[in-house]
Length: 312
Ligand SMILES: NC(=O)C1=CN([C@@H]2O[C@H](COP(=O)(O)OP(=O)(O)OC[C@H]3O[C@@H](n4cnc5c(N)ncnc54)[C@H](OP(=O)(O)O)[C@@H]3O)[C@@H](O)[C@H]2O)C=CC1
Ligand SMILES: O=C(O)C(=O)Cc1c[nH]c2ccccc12
Image (spheres, rainbow, N blue to C red):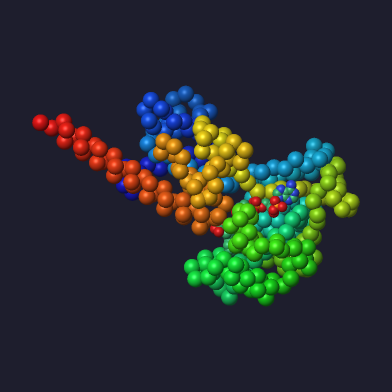
């Protein structure tokens, strides 16, 4: 590795980042550590890449304090071993919720899954090829709505009618929906088969909790030993970046809509906050690299002119 590239191994540490106007530089400081153990990085350009999944989204649920069993978010879920023999309610049917349900089944727990909205479930692989890779490849040649039609026909063939299992599909196709709303399709790795066999039960939204019971919005009541919140993640940029121009306090995402959210002021950039997955991140990354290269070359030119002006 080149000597001028430094790796800040900083997991578990908290950071605070501020622009130092007097020096025209960004200061990245570790906070909450003992005196003498602080670290500071100083830089001209700062690329924020902490993503849309930086911290857990934990919804408010009526009666949460009353419920006797554990309520944990997927961010602290390791494996289903501790839930063996237990009735577990998994809230949220994104990729996390679906995979956790399958893992619970494989550990002899009895999971139920809360599905409150429509969802696109696609097979993870088709004839040995990854659906994601195949989609990205097809997008090179075909418009998005055609790729979506292909994905839906293939899903019907490989997975059957998901609506019959309580998983209605959105009106928009999977890629168009991802593009417009950021909602990621679920890639099935065996959960659907467990729903079909009755090993996983599909439930509506939670109305309220009592000591041992979950009451659903359709009035049904059921006892559970534990609840796992597979309710997703959010950006946490405003908690550590002391700057409020570029990032919204509300959702921690760039204020300017796609494709203009990548650049802020004073050498500040953002990569991977477009809700467009890897494709979005790669668009940001190219633009940022080009912009920094342009600034770098302009600086070098000024510096050369300045040096020349000093020489006799
Ligand atoms: N193997 C893989 O590729 C995996 C990929 N991932 C990725 O990680 C990212 C995060 O995934 P994930 O953790 O699943 O989060 P997501 O945001 O993708 O999914 C969260 C789910 O929870 C639901 N939800 C949120 N709040 C509530 C509530 N109060 N009541 C009921 N349902 C609720 C949402 O429903 P609604 O849509 O109605 O808001 C949504 O279905 C995604 O990009 C995902 O694709 C995650 C796991 C595995
Ligand atoms: O997360 C990405 O990089 C995306 O662009 C969307 C996406 C996630 N999982 C998929 C599976 C099939 C097609 C698109 C996606």
